[in-house]
Image 1: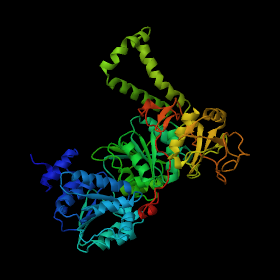
Image 2: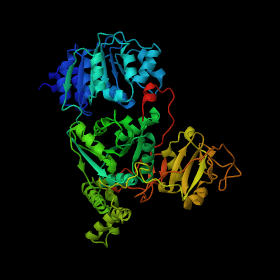
Image 3: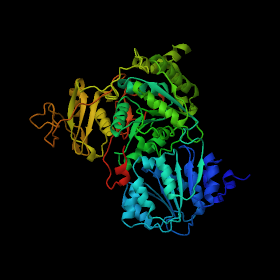
Image 4: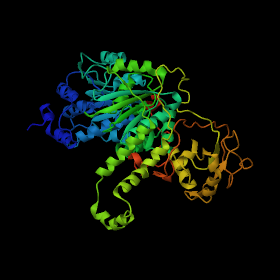
Length: 626
């Protein structure tokens, strides 16, 4: 039987590589675009939603058209983000694994440019790049594009949305006039249409579905809440979906980091992804997410592209995007490769108009949903647990030796009593947590909103003490690592920690007043990298107390930061955690162990911090807005 990809004109070497990746049949965009692109003599515009297989749609034809006996660049693929650049590079390397001499190089900001230059000098046929770093390399006269025959502009709408129009013009001016340009995009705003007009000659245009529409496999829902209840609503949604594997989108880097930190402290398996993380930190976060060691990825729109992760069940819009078209790309992170998914928007009453605009753009109607009650959540979690117990795989050989002792322990209990006690062991946590839980739903005509100020019910630092600690980012700490370090050594829960302000050689954090003295006692004698760790109270309003102002500290002097620190926001609504500790990536800590819903007991904290920007970032980083 002839393979469907072979019928499209793809060679056996590439078809076998595609089969090894588990792809049996081409997607609609691949089926219609590959035969056209294999001709190699037309400009091309392909409009299709994210998750429909666009990388293979242009990647497979490129592998058939390029001369791999030559080590000169013959194809250039431009894309908006580092994550997408790495994803495209990985896919094409996998497609070409059976082709002798095939070389693909990823060029992106935030990584070592010298290494990228070495790879280019060693010979390359396909260059995948973000615009800013590509301009840096062109400016060094380190690459020759005179042999480029094909230029692919992937996610063209997003590149323009991020301000890369001028960069694209400059890059394309260094390529031959007779090259063929292939443009792929999820939406077709006027700016993308102008690119097609300026750089293409009578392009073949292929549209899968209606222009700008959303994936038909995605359901769209919205919840109306008061702005101060957004964070509580987010937790309620997550708790009601025990098997959730989701991307949560925020508007700014600060909100992204803040939401992630609060989720971690409340015991959720979450982490942040935004533009202020170094490439190493971003890779670490994405690896954990791809391996499903993390349930919630909190991200800015920079992550809307390049998160090619299978089986994402939900996309949650904690904040609606500024550009309505960006919603299409956000929601496209779920419902990929034929799977179904749910895209949720948490909005206040003033944002209903934006929901209606999005409906017009994607051509689908949203369902207005009601946040579940505390009872609904408890019931859902209980039967999720029952289902897991029913289907758990029993290792007979290992557990057999313990069965006599187990049976002896339960000897006086009936079957019904054992089941009740087992269910209550976990169920009581949710009963306590959601006891007297308020109704978070708001109505569309609720005019009591005061905007997005303090989205999660910001509160002052009253009841908290601000402390100095002599470790920081130079010790490779992130905010999540510092949280884990303090909780582990101070023997306190993550919910006791307020605002964390990570500096270079020192940091500040807030802790509940009631736990200050025990924290000091537990930290006596603690060391990190063979040096004593010092914690001190800061003077009110100061960035760090001197020796004479430090009322509760111990140890010697050290550098202090001047200036005011400001109050740390903490969430309102359902802010208490429940349960004991959970093992975080940096060590055991508090943070509200909540494994009832299937969250991993391991790797609970991770790299949730902002981190330092890695040196050598390119224009692609500087232009990125979030």
